[in-house]
Amino acid sequence: MTRLIALFLLLTVSLRGQQRPTYSLYFENLTNINPGYVGLDNSLSITGVVRNQWIGILGNPKQQVITAHMPYDLVNGGLGIIFESDQTGLRKDTRTSIQYSYYLTSSTEQSFSIGLGLGFYQRTIDGNGYRTPSGQYSDGSPFNHNDQILSLQQENATAIFVDFGMYYRSRGWEGGLSITNLNAPIADVNDYSFTFERTLHLYGRYYHELNSKFGLIGNAALLSNLEQHQILINTGLQINENIMLGIGVRGITEIDALMLQGGIKLNDQWKLFYGYDSGISSFSNSLGGSHEIGLNFNINKRIGGGVPPRIIYSPRFL
Image (tube, rainbow, N blue to C red; front, side, top):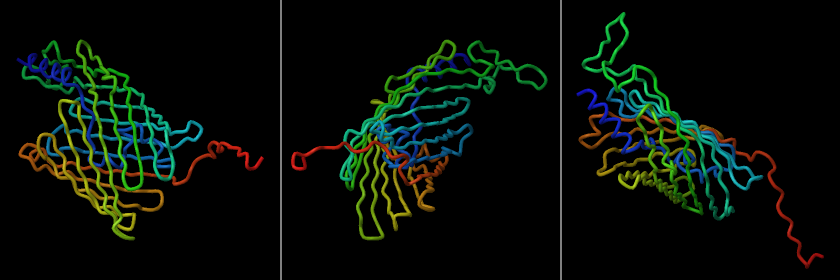
C-alpha cells in the first residue's frame, strides 16, 4: 500500500508538473517573473524577499529570492541575475538565472522591451526524512523504509530552463506578459521525471495622482498554466511618495486569501515592504496565514557613461 501511495504521488508530480512559487508582493520584484522588466528601475536595483507560507502546517512552503538588475547602455538594454530557493516538505528547488532585456523603444514618454532568462533548476529530495508504517527507525540501528521505491539518500536532479517576457510602460500605466519555463524543463530523479510547468504571467499597473501628497495604485496579475488560473488584485494608497498601504485578494476557483500590504522608503536608496495573507476560504483558512517581507536597494544613479548619442548631420549646418 505504501508503494502505491508513493508511486501515485510521484506520478502526480510528473503529470501535473511543478508550478513556480507565488508571491503576494510580486509587483515589488517584477524581474523575478518577467525578464522584459530588467533594467527598468533605471539603475542598479537589488531586491531580497522571504516568504513563509501556510504557517499552520508542518513542512509548509518557504521561499527566498534575491534579484539584481541594471540598465547597460552598451547593449541597449539591461542585465540581471536571480537566485531563488523554494522548499516544501522534503523537496527543495533552487533556481539560478541570468537575464537580458533589449529596449525596442525607450523615452520619457514610453518604453517597450523584450527579455530572455536562461538558467537551471536543482531539485533535492531528502529521502532520509520519509517515514513508512513498515519502516525501521529505531535509535542505534540503520534506517530502513522497507520500501523499494523510497530512497534513504538525498536525491538530486538538474534541469535547464528558458524564460521570455515583454514589458510596456507609459505615463500612468504599465504592464507585461511573460512565460516562465518556456521549454517545460524536465528533471529526472532515478526512474521518475518532474516537469516544471510553463506558466503564463500577465501583469498590469495603474497609478493616479490625487494631489501633491496622495496617489492611488492598482496592480493586477494573472498566472496560468492553461489548466489552472490564479488571479491577484491589489489596490493601494501612496502617501508623500514614500509610504504605501494596500489591500488585495487572491484566488483560483474562488477568492481564498485576503492580502494586507505595506511599504516604506527608508531613504533615497532603501525600501522595506511587508505583506500578510489571511485565508478566507474553508480550505485555506485551516492552513494558517502567510508572511512575506522584502528589502530593495536602488543606487539611484546610472553606472557608467554608456554609449554617446549618434550624430545626425543636417544640411542646414554644413
